[in-house]
Image 1 (spheres, rainbow, N blue to C red):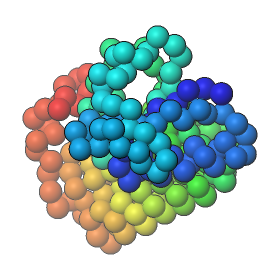
Image 2: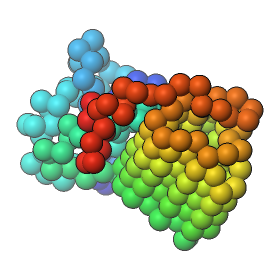
Image 3: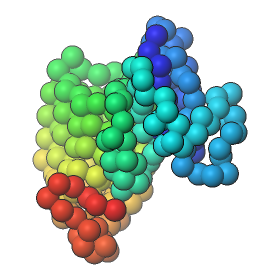
Length: 228
């Protein structure tokens, strides 16, 4: 089995722990060592039967052998920042896919993705890297979800939808076919996306309409990615 660490010992990290256990029940794949977390109060704790091994200093001392990691952080901007902090370590990013997820053989996956229970990915779907699909997400044919995006519970993306880098899509959102969500935008829970959503905004409602421009993200953006 491969040695695995979960980055983040919060709610999503604990859910990822159970996901690993479900994968291993189906077929032994991962030797889960525990969590890495930057929160001082969590250091030395045991959470859901797995230890918080330490912070980034622990990685610096323990990367002399093959080590796999997944970032179980929900918020895309936080996820981007934390993954960037791992670039100096020799690590492999794991794809964690629940055995009860239904994934077409034609789906293209990057690395570091978490795909939870009862998700459905149809024909020719493209998933980037470090994407989180929470339980019950349904992704239609020819749809793309790009790096660092997080889809919460029961999100439905119809066919030919484009979700750009770093998007955060709230639970029970529905996106109709051939629509586009601009990078680093946030879609509120229960929204219906019936037209294209620009980048760097928060959009809510039925139909979804931009209500806030995320100026702080624009000001910190560079061609190489979001610098936080």
